[in-house]
Length: 407
Image (cartoon, rainbow, N blue to C red; front, top):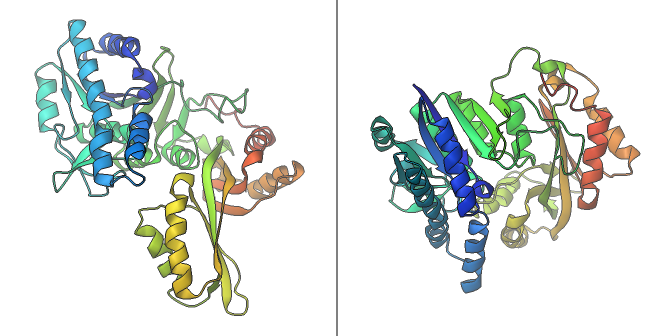
């Protein structure tokens, strides 16, 4: 009997009717299968809870934030289990703790360290559908933790890996992975298949379909992921290992991320250990940086610039201003009006001239490039935020993205 893990996001379970719709969808797929269903909090519940926290405290304690945010998924699992039972199915709900999802101690952005599947396995063996709360776990100190934005994707993929599931189906309000955001590029095409590496780059560079850490986990443990629509029966996009023929397409997708900020620390003394001090101060605030650029040294000083999530930039600026004073730097400047646009494709490994074509395309549109980052299968540019959508459309056209969507 096939074992399938399904995940339904917040928009799929936003109200009681949508929860009943998910229950009907689960029921229709249940015959001949063992099912584990991972769910997020209903609709904008998490945003609402974050708002409440900031109404009572200007700087909520991370432990208490996790205690608060974890309640959202607990509501959904109970309601979905009830809806399944109302359809005549046996179902049992589990919090992250009850599903034995163990994490490290990093509150609000914990990483999964271990999953003991015994209790979920017992539920499946008893003929039940196991409904598991996404986004949450328990640290080695028995403290409730949450996995960060999109953490339910990670919960589903991790459970699929631990249970050796045949497939992990991610149900969302879109029907697959597209060559670009269809809201920005109307003629964007749905991809039939995408490799782990491409999806990992696309997810980390702004594609909102899957959390990047979940893709990383899927690649590490060989979990096949099927991104599908909650509201349509159509096949979606398979995220799987790279296959022959994928490199024939130079660019698979164009992504953009408008939730970026850029910080620069000016006239930094250019000597060993300074970079470690600068980025060590940021690391203590649990801030993850993205692109890093250091200018050529002049007169023994240099400038350092980097990008990071916009929501983290104030914490980072506060930490850096203290470091700047201690090392004798001139000061810290920051800009929240930036965006990152990227092209992704395994075909870049075997095709030359991709970077020059990207830069020429942006130049033709009068778009200035502030920072550049490259990997084996991706090129990213930081630009002014107001040009993000124009850049995506221009690059999508220039590289004729979508011609290999049915590869």
